[in-house]
Length: 230
Ligand code: HEC
Image (tube, rainbow, N blue to C red; front, side):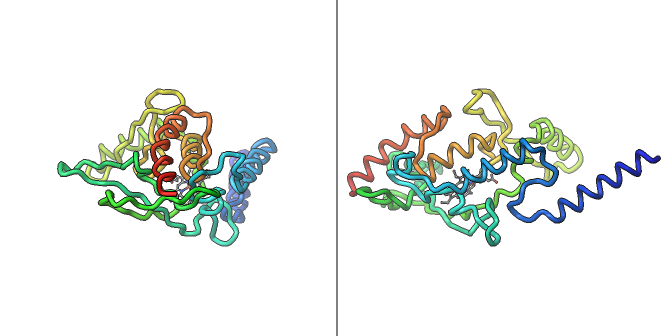
């Protein structure tokens, strides 16, 4: 009974510490190592990239925090920055992201001697996407795939009409099937992969992941198009 009371007490302390934590704060109760990793990650997230670090030639903002900021000064949220996606729908209804013309994500900034992209006249679909807050996503990343699969299974049995459907994707790092957890269509399996994509797509910086290398090859025609326009 005493052990139970102690556990309850500890639980209450952790809960009240959590209640004191504000947006953008680290999870209360981190080990010294994790707290240090949090600070290192935050420094990287707020760092303003320069051209010699890989920024550009076209990009959207020079740091993650330029979009993921707020409420107030909370790092990792959203300042409501919109970005533009474009593409074209074929007569059979299929979507063409116009990758050869820099789609589907528009890069609206450019470094010196380059021009920002503009939506090409070939586009028939133009959509704005609002920056989403990232609070708590480390916990989603750390939750095993099987937990989500089990939840989906239980939903399919008890609430089939509203059950979530797991999105199974290929992890570009391991080349193995994985559960998609991030992005609008749950098309990205981990924060590691999403962050690599963000460095490439929002800032133009290449990373070592195979997916981003492939994506960078995909941007070559778009850069040619940009240069033509310059
Ligand atoms: C120009 C604005 C902008 C910049 C700069 C930016 N992001 Fe984002 N971010 C967005 C938008 C808009 C979305 C939502 C769009 C989507 O999911 O396709 C998003 C979504 C995300 C998500 C997925 C959230 C979810 O719930 O699935 C992660 C993770 C993320 N960003 C990390 C980063 C990192 C890391 C950087 C810096 C390398 C970064 N972002 C830079 C605008 C930005």
